[in-house]
Amino acid sequence: MRLSELKQGQAATIARVGGSGLLRRRILEMGLVKGAEVYVEKYAPLRDPVELIVKGYHISLRVEEASQIDVVNVA
Image (cartoon, rainbow, N blue to C red; front, side):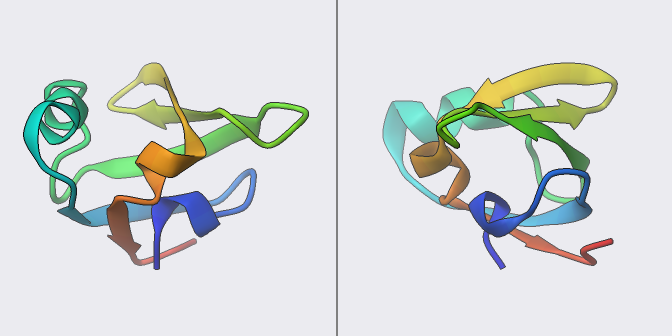
């Protein structure tokens, strides 16, 4: 399942970070690494961007960027 497919209030574990180049490196530097737990705090009114909580930090990603991240153990 993709991170962009999660609904508001769901949590999951990151399985793989896709993409390439600077975008992938930026995502990894923000703490979105394999094994990290991520919680979908909320979506913007038009569903883009999405606000996430990772390791206690609030991070906003575009839905297009979130679609590059695979997640498992959705709760």
